[in-house]
Image (cartoon, rainbow, N blue to C red; front, side, top):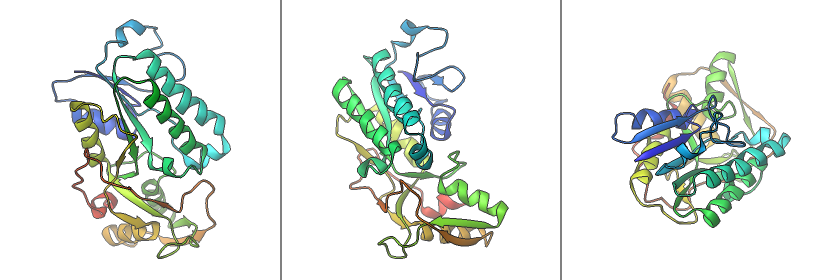
Length: 263
């Protein structure tokens, strides 16, 4: 099959590209240097060449919850209008769309933009699978707002701040489902090779939930006491709990929380 990956230079995209490189598929990587999802499929204007894709894995997006609160238009423009561009330019391709578990509780412009993009796909695409990714970890994540990146930075600074310890959870910190990037990419590959789910969404998580404090504790137990933990005020846009409502048929998680946090 002829497959395009938008956002191929990102965290998930780069791992997916690595996993697909030795397959029989014809893989086309659409990274930040040759692709802008808000405007045209290629800067050289070769639209007709790109219309023949069998599958488009649409990963390109803005993904920082906190930033979206301060720059809502940037997120609506990129994540909604950018997805419409994908639909328009690739009308015959199966679309595999990267949405977010945050779409279950629309607390931020990021979550709202992804939910709106899902609606565009459901109403216009002939064949699709919509994935709602939960908290992705493992390998080397690139999101500077992500918890994994925060732990790496804390190893250098000596301190890590958990935002909010007064939530209605077992230890007052937010609850999340953490999924290893390899397990997530394996789910994408399964979706590439199977018919589109055509469902409202497919949740992509490990099926096991932990509080932020439990995650940090696991990190320190696995890697050694590298920093002290502090608590700060809640961060605007954060959901109290983000857990998978059911396990998608595309998921077969093999990695544990220890695998995710291990340096």
